[in-house]
Structure formats: C-alpha cells, structure tokens
Length: 286
Image 1 (cartoon, rainbow, N blue to C red):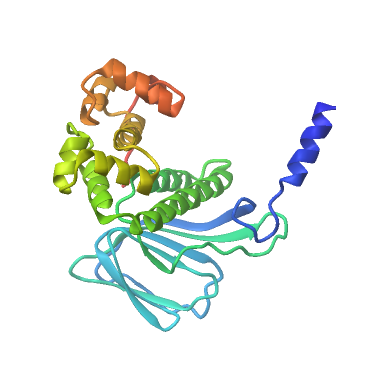
Image 2: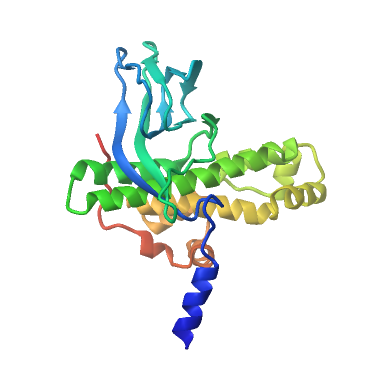
C-alpha cells in the first residue's frame, strides 16, 4: 500500500513539459579548458547544432554571434543558443582562458530540445563552485575511463544548476539596496577577517540596527547569518581541495575557535568538516 501511494504521488508531481528545468537532461559532445593563443579563432559556423556554454576565467576575446559583436572578459558567461551563427577571435594583448562546453539539452518527457534561461552574455564574476565543477568535468572528459560519458553528462547538469543559482542570485542582488550590496560585497572579500554589524554599518554610514533591518528585508537573512554562510561556503571549498587541515581552514575563514567552526559547519552542511578532507591534494589540470 505504501509503495502504491508513493508511485501516485511521484506521477502527480511530474513536471509538465516546458514548465521549468527539472525534467531536462544534457548530452555533452565536447568540453575543453582552453588557454587561447593570440591567433586562436572560431571559423564561421553556418548554424551550430549544439548549445555553446563558455565561462571566461581570464583574458578576453571578441565574438560575432548572429550578426552582433560581443567582447567577453574574465567573469563573463557566454551562452550561444543552438542554431546560431558565430565566429570568434582572441585579443592578442590578453588571450582568453575559458571553459567551453558544447552539448545537447533535451526535455526528458517530450524528448524535444530544451532551452536554457540564460542571456547570451551574462556577467557572473568569479565563481569558485563553477570552476570546481568544470575542473571535475575536465578531469572526467580527458580520462576517457569507462562510464566517463555518463559522469560528464551528470556534471553538465550540476554546472547548469550552479549557474542558474548564480544568475538568479545576481538578478536578485541587482535590485537590493546599494548599501546592503556594498556590505555584502565587503563580506565576500573579507570573510577571513573579524567582521561585526557595527563595522559594516560604519562602512556604509548607517546605524547598525537600521543596517540589520535593511539586510533582512533585502536578503532574507541577518548580517550574522550571511557572514556565517559565506565563511562556511568558502571553508567547504578549501576543505575539498585537501591542501589545508581543519584548523587552518577555520582560521582562514574567520573562525578563531576550531570547535565552534566544526559545530557551525556540521549545523549548516549536515556533515563534520573532517568528512570533506582528502588524503591527498587534488591534481590541478594542465
């Protein structure tokens, strides 16, 4: 009886075709972590048969897509839709470094092509989680080990999910009070230092109580909770790299008490910091 109820519930919750992205799947055709030479170029494509997703992590390049010219720089996300015409050249003064993924995207139920809700060019800045996932995909893609296609397609969906989160957060922050955004940006850049609401209030010339009220209204969280979230998120990345021990990570992320750090980490992530420590540092792709 319990099994039948579960089946009915799942069927009722199945996403309708075209309603959101919960029913998509990706098929990766090509992936590269590219360090362009000054003479690098993309020769004209009549119509691409794939989606081209490129995240620029250094330098710049010039793209011409469907008759329009775009200059991409470090921190830009380029999403070229399927069926586009495109050419590209590098800026000789500062050749582009990027991650590029060409893939098909389908709706699981209709088997028809799906469309990503990204603008052709979006500024997302430096995103460590996106870089980490793309590095993982790169390692899977070049290994060509048994099952690599399955894992590559899974990583593609994780990357898309992370980019959706990033772009939605950027859109939300663009409408946030500029003083709150300035304080939030300061936290992002100085999370390893001692931070207080009073210090941040002085930075944006507000009363601490008023800043706290604005912060909660704009971001839906308190100043203290936001600081903790940023610190723990960065700690998670450092722990996964396997280079630093727990005490070092705690100090680097602004915690002076390693036991308090461990308790806070487990409360927010559901596992202790020790669960993320690797025995050996992860290899860095060349």
